[in-house]
Amino acid sequence: METVFLGLFLFGTLFTVVSVVLGFAGLELGHSQGGGAHGADAIHAGTAHQHPPVMHHPGHGADAAQPSAHQAGDHGGPLPLLNGSTLLAFVTWFGAAGFVVLRFTGLPLLAALAIALPAGLAGALLIARFLKLVLAGEKVMNPAEYQLEGTIARVSSGIPAGGAGEIVFSMGGRRRSEAARTVNGAPAPRNTEVVIIEYQHGTATVQPWSEFVRRTPPAAPSAE
Image 1 (cartoon, rainbow, N blue to C red):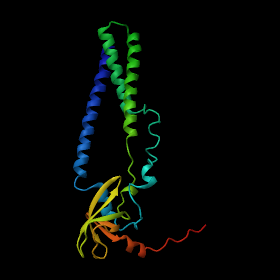
Image 2: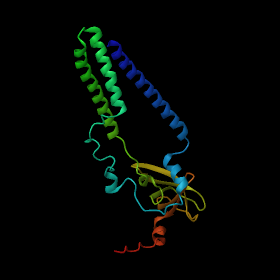
Image 3: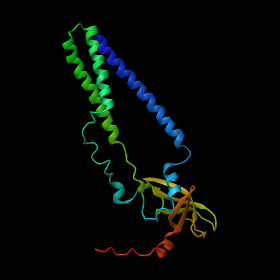
Image 4: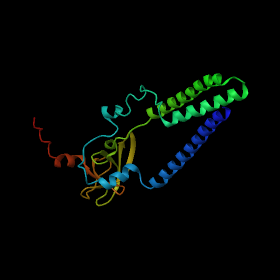
């Protein structure tokens, strides 16, 4: 029976090491394939003409302060006990405890099982607790929070006629800056409040807020 316990322990340990190595390898592969373009910028570069601008101030207001539905209540949920990681932890700790008891204490098999089972459960509970903390810290990204079109910004470096300048704005709770041109090639002095009309190839096309308001028709009343 010592051999069985030892086999379970070695299997669990080896499988854990292999899983960790493969996980790091997959992470490095993902970074190498995803390098060269920012996720949000790459998305907007391909979809700049598909959606009309919707006015919003990212990172401000009551909506930004509220957690998303995927985040709320994660801390109070049940422990993720039935998954591969917790089962693997149970097998590893169960095998290790059973082997140590039979090998070094001389206790009978029933006593070894009585000790190994709680040890396995303890290992599974520890891993489940760790997974719960990890899952509770995850944030599901809302694409609307990273949509540049419709974002209100401020010109930080004056935009010359037919040229490019720079704008600053808040996005996802962080301050960002982007190169910018005006929609009609007109100049926009520093501190002008503008609206991002579209975003392509790392440059935002903007329009002064006052012009945008004048050209935007009022919303039609909804039929009830």
